[in-house]
Image (cartoon, rainbow, N blue to C red):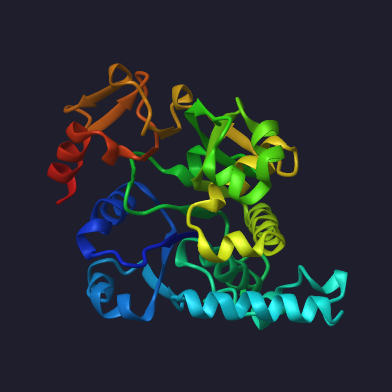
Length: 294
């Protein structure tokens, strides 16, 4: 069984229908695990009757007070020498500090996924996908078309010299080192279970190491994703939009996008990618997707 993990905190059912309906149409032998908060569950629960492959895993939404308490607890124990170096990156330690709830859901999802993967029996998943849901549709079976041990998508742009997310995590030196390198998108990563477990652990290790920023800022998983790939800490196949498999199209030139009414698909650089990401940045594509799935 292949598994998709996707954060959906704060979403309405209509936000998820293109993602779920396109998955139902194009994917095989899979389940979708939506990472949501308890308040989301009654809103999204009706979807399970329509999509039997859907289930939920609960995040606890942390507020600023819970984040501050989490950080102060960490600092106090580290200064007291209670946290030994070899313990700082263990799953049990992260759970003790409540990092599944002490960070905003966009980031705490990684700590929840880390635990969910650890609780599964070895070999339980053929392939595992970490994906955004609100702005992704499937146009083919990504689980069969993307066979590399670990694969992600690139954006048609580069890291700016004063990139805010890079600066918040890695400071000015990180900004200088990564400036001019291609942006890799954290919104879609697919791999075998072992590779995804290693990837998620690396992301959580980086968040744990840079905990202050992680507690109070969103979007920093993108900075970590870029750093892990460009600094050689993560080995993955990176797909360009023109490769025709994963298309991350927020900044793609409109001339490279074509609606194929015959195929009921969006072509990017003449190809029909199995994963179309960030289509909602293009009004014509929003209209097409809504007509297709809503």
